[in-house]
Image 1 (spheres, rainbow, N blue to C red):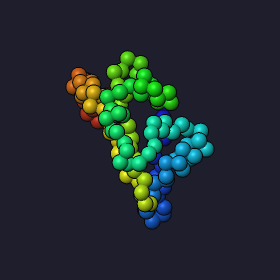
Image 2 (image 1 turned 90 degrees about the vertical axis):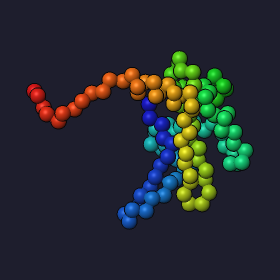
Image 3 (image 1 turned 45 degrees about the horizontal axis):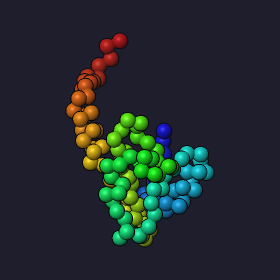
Image 4 (image 1 turned 120 degrees about the vertical axis):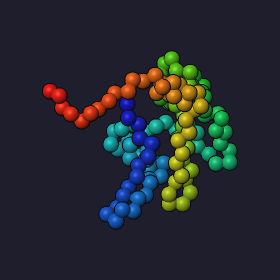
Length: 120
């Protein structure tokens, strides 16, 4: 499934501007595509990032969270938006446990070689 976490508007001169989080949610609703769930909102100084890493959000009481997989020990991570001024700072924080699992999957994946030649 697709979930919106950011909307960037670029004008004719190439100037880019992110919509605020509240505007992102309103935009997503207006086009019928879900936005990522909001797990926490507050002051930057009050965030406890460890609370949001290496966890399975639904099992930890965040009923709106989108599960990665039923048997996953944790979810992928979180996106942190710091809104100040015209351009928010947006950070994607991946769980260390998820990164280990992702690395193992990438290490065992087959490498498919593309030669660019159509042999049909």
